[in-house]
Image 1 (cartoon, rainbow, N blue to C red):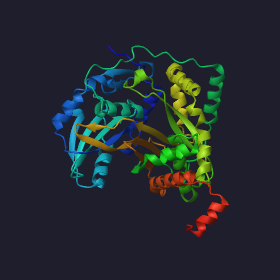
Image 2: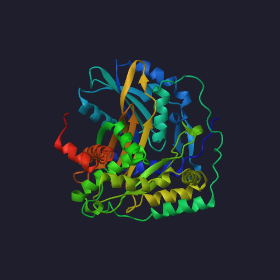
Image 3: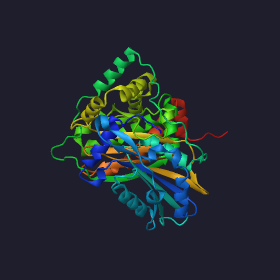
Image 4: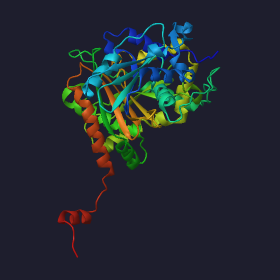
Length: 439
């Protein structure tokens, strides 16, 4: 009998939050859309294919039951005939997006594992899509990456399941000095900011959903040119720049102030690659706001995210996730989601393996993000096969915010161009202005 760490405070919070949503748009549903080129598969073959691999994925065979100390993971056998389905859609990308958003709003059954895989076909003549959706209380972004690689990766075997936790893993030792430093970081970011509190424009549970794409090479080039930044820093810099530009005319509260962003820090160990539940710690960072150059914004963003990259800080977060009493953790999570503190979330995922199903190759993966009640927007970027796809879930109460995806992409292009542009000497600049020389 496999045993896992009990449901975390984040798991219980995401389950309860979804139950309080006033509109299905604010449900805790996440996932991914795999776009494939090739012949549309037969549904029975796809169902059989998935069934042969479910034994390796306990996160797809468990339910969250109970509350508080009684909360537990309950085993439930998934039925591929129920979980794997097909839908024909009209031609064109708009029809596909409409079908995806419709399925995102569908409720989850109470007595079956909360996931579905839908074969979407008809939108293109030479391909199809596979939509994977799940409840965020049962799986996080890292789990979805692991599932997609286990199902559609180049080495997706059908053999014995991997070793799964039989007891909580040994935790890394945390030094008192690091605990104090990490506590100071968390407390500094626990203050209320009221950036999204507007009596004249209260936030809602209705969401607009948009996807935007960009070459991953732009992210990597900007990170490499900066010398110390990660692609996540570049992604967050472009996001902060887009929000600051939008807010300058549409949301004065966020026009000049730092932009608070909740960043999920993955704390999943190798043994937990496919276990149910969230293994992350939502940590707030304050991105630079106001009007500034993109190169300067990247430098400030890199400083803001420094603590998230430190192994010692991550060890403290892992200890908090696994050692603190569930009641205390639930109070901390609830406090971070209180009015005046709740803010946007921004995730970054990387799919390192090229995915395929049979002879059909996955050309792009669009992530699916959730945006809980009270949050202004939520964003997730997924990098696969040289392309970055970003999903924006935006509260309809934010005026003109549907421009944010395009502003993010433009900021990324401008950042890559600005940071890679060499500084020319006065003589070289004069020669360039004079035109090419001839001899």
